[in-house]
Figure 1 (tube, rainbow, N blue to C red):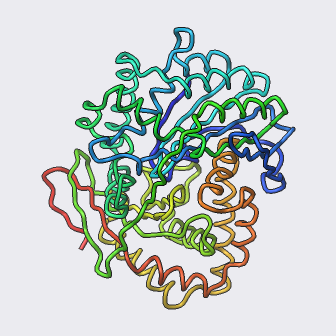
Figure 2: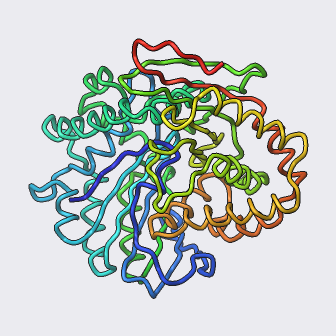
Figure 3: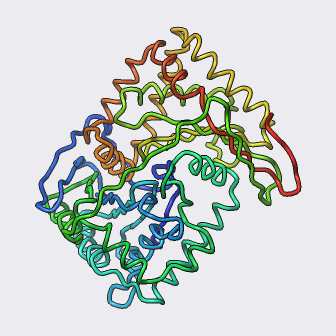
Length: 434
């Protein structure tokens, strides 16, 4: 069955599956095709058995008001559940051997369709039909609401998700700070008319960025044109997302959940993908992610790691967070250690050996974010969305090589000295990181 999954900002690449190719992504050029209704960015790989098309729409959380929290997710899920000849679109795509995923972030909603090229050509018109004429009847919206509500409940029970959301709320000043899935109260009040109006206002061609990766045949080009043509030519008011600067004295936010151990999340501002400091921040991410790493034969799930790092560069301004799992490490010690690392980097930068080590780690982490077709299509669209060239992936790899100790000092001074602390603690407990 297709997973129409609205994921937390910053986790899109990790959660959306694709098909890897034997060809190194960095060696594949990105070309631009004029679809007439929208530009189409293509990374063609004839060795791949599959092709994937992504549509990135400027219809994310920052388009919502507080009373509409969850509407972006509900709209995307409603499209996935729109009947095609009596069968929900998601089920139709799955039955024909394709996958369709959706996700919502602070600024963008993402739809990703993947299949063999010949199958993709038959599926794209169906997805286009649902995008152009979503079924906002009570039955379909209620089915979508149940899915979004379940995701909301999952996030509320996950202390990492709760902490990241708290940090986002303290950082962004508009709807970008709202919960990705809304709340039980706001979701219950949203109607089919709300969904219909949201799609009409924001699902327009001027908000669309179309990208593809894999075996992109001329027929797949035509499929992408059909998807782009599904959106109306109406105009939409520009959306501007702003963020609050973090204070010199760290702000602490505390909430309680039914969990067994406390979790601490430190949130920082961060450079966007088009910023000259982006590559240096990737090296800093490697430092913080490696400092508490315990060797493991397998990749641990987020909630099981002692300390983890999330770089949410699917928005601008971007954010960066470090979380501490209280079952693995005392939150107060974790906070002190992260502060010490930031102070050390700001004061001294890195030695040549340290810089070499963490550049290598940063390279490895960056490559793992550009492995699947879904990853590649996302990266292309994300680069374009935030003012970078569509083929920026290899350029960023080169930029990692060029990072200096002075760059690390500047990054640490600029971004790691101010932060917010979100503490998620068990109910009836009273713990503080300080």
